[in-house]
Image (tube, rainbow, N blue to C red):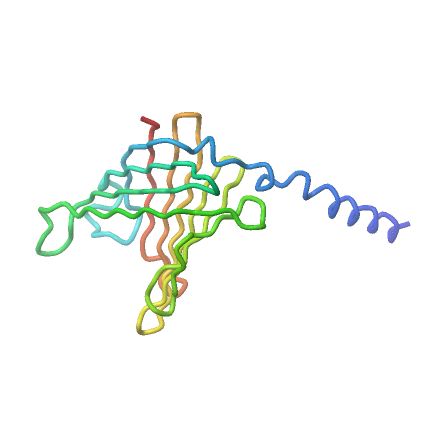
Length: 179
């Protein structure tokens, strides 16, 4: 009887789980738009700035014929001798569908061993994740993860983490509003 119940449980798990997978039904549409907000560094910054709003963020997500494009801009105080200046960084990444539901790849091919990032995205029920890996000339693995979670139709939370060789060196939490 136990064996029969185990077989039934495994059958149910294997046949029902794909139907309930949020990635299979997820769409980029709820994320499309221009989002603006502010964030705080939770770690990886000078002690006097941890926990204070220390960056302005913009994210624009546009649909394309075979996927979507994500552009993000960050403005934050520069460190060290240029502490009174603002550091501005931006990146735009086009993503295309692949044969796995909810998974997208960066359309430009990066070679992580040459210092180029390899970037992919995953769209879930209420979250858009963007993952990036790069390998330095010294062989150090850098992994960045951006999780953009919809809190409502017009509010988004961003959680960013940056790891070097498996250790988190920076994490940021931000709140953005659709413009």
